[in-house]
Image (cartoon, rainbow, N blue to C red; front, side, top):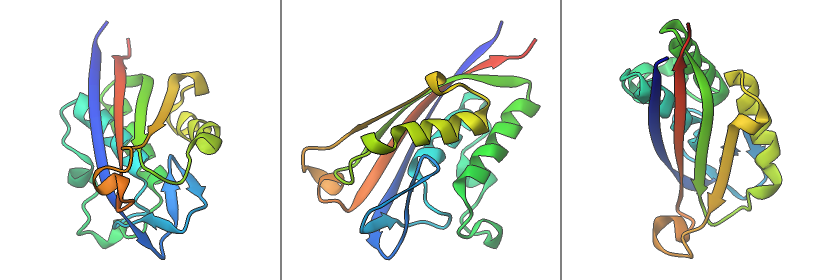
Length: 160
């Protein structure tokens, strides 16, 4: 049996006047993530982890921010397209482990909805999708609430 591990990371600036989408869920907050798409930092990190596990480049290679086709696109679509590419290479996901780094808003009340959204797209159970969150204790750009970061690790298994 063949296994592949992938790691992804994504950063987005926080700005007024944008919705905040994390893990496929709209989170109430006075700031949102700035980006070409809906700027869902968690889904982007998971996409990069899946693509990286099979040495397929990163999210920017497959969904460039120079393309009008991806302007304001729902990142759940990008996650599904990335997963379809993984499946076309003969792999399936075993699990996702992720961490969010932001000062506000609190993520815990939204974790179950995020897990459900991600699990549905990736054909996993909620127990196969780990989402953790932390702050930087007010240090750096995350601590000043200028941006947020997501990290994701995935395990892929070759289908027999």
